[in-house]
Length: 234
Image (cartoon, rainbow, N blue to C red):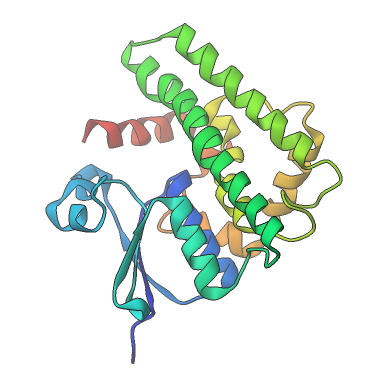
């Protein structure tokens, strides 16, 4: 039996779930290798040959001469083009998709990631920088307000259709409890989260390779914080 075209290397993080969500939503068969941060597998020689940045996720497309793609946004764009899924066909709409994808990659992810780091990793170690916490939480909230405005009158970020922009943005936005960023008053954003919370394929995806429900405000927060912190001690 032939192997699936896509071999995905990933872990249970906001960026790591993006290609999983795509593949599950698109009903594309794939092979998955879990990258264990505790063993520093993302820094191993074999993995660094695939992804010189030593981060997840990475894919190999066996159906395209073992072509390697790293960076989560680039992976989504590649998969959307390969399978002709979750990406507008119109030239201007496709440009808008790229713009909002870059908005997530350059803004939502980094800002919320730093809000998480300073509150969930640094502060418990006794390195509590309130200035940094306030800055990243405030900027994260501002960016979520931009999304809320974009969602006015829309089911999804680009309109009626679910796209890679939603796939890229959802794991980060939905982790607002972990970043300790309020979405109170952002009714459009809350409705969008609820809409994607109700998508079975996406909800299956965020349990692969293993669930980390505390990111989304569920489960044992203290135990999850300790587990998450151990990744940074490895």
